[in-house]
Image (cartoon, rainbow, N blue to C red; front, top):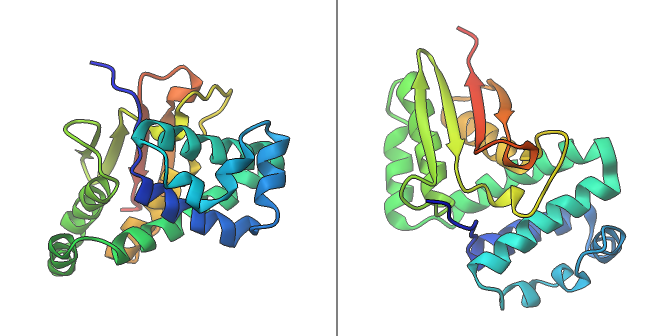
Length: 202
């Protein structure tokens, strides 16, 4: 069953606030305009009025605009945005998730890695099997079946740099390790889903 991507307006507004810190409030309308996307997305109050599907459109569109404006430099910017978004999601997490995050710190390294990604899935509001985490020997795989970053996007390369940053920061937060993360399949590049392989150095 194919379901349209969705993003909560709260998540979109947190993402937007971080985008502003990276590209500046003054520049964001210019960046959106160059990509021929709605300049209204530069204002948080406009994003608050969107439903979950149109919020996903804005979430993907703002990322597209950054890629268009910054070219090769966009990857680093978007990964930084993803890293900071993890911090914002954790800071604003429900009490239950914060309690589980605290308990997670007492687990062995291998268990902490997977638990951190499962926490990320919950904080992103993924439902049912929309986003799943799998163990591959000592390594991990995250499969994003719905991938709001790719909503209405087509590209020759994998584009989910924000998700990459989220994964990296979640694992670093839990383990102080910096694994190799590769997006080996992307819905924007003819993939059926977005698949991230997370490789540790053992």
